[in-house]
Image (cartoon, rainbow, N blue to C red; front, side, top):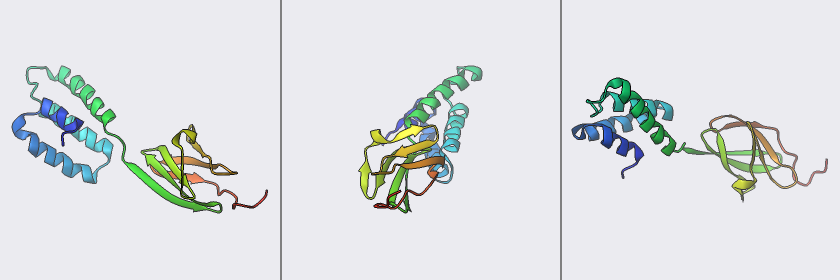
Length: 152
C-alpha cells in the first residue's frame, strides 16, 4: 500500500534505498511518538535527497513543505477511553488532544452535538451534560454527574 509518506520518499530518495529506509522508519515508528517519526522522515528526505543539483539552502525548505503535507495527511491515532461516574459509563474517543466522539451509557453521541470551548468539552447526556477538561492526548478530568433519577 502506497501512502503519502511513501510517495514523498519515492519522489526524493534514491530508488535503490527506498525499501531499506522504509523498513528503518517503520521500526522506529513503533517505539516513538508521531512527531519524532515525522522529524526522522524529514531528516531522511534532506540527507538522502536525490535533489543534488538543488542547493541545500533551497532543499531544506522544499522538503519541509513536502513533509508538512505528509503531516497533514498523517491522522493522529484514535484512542478510546472508557470511564464511569455516578450517572453511568461513557467512552471518549480522541485523535491526539481532540475529542472526536463519545458514547454515554452505550449510546453514540452525535459528533455535531459535542461542544468544544477551549480545553472544555461538553457532551450532552440526558438531564446533565458531561463536562470534561482535556489534559493531554487521551487524558481528561471531569466532575462526576449526579446519579440518574436523583433530584437536585
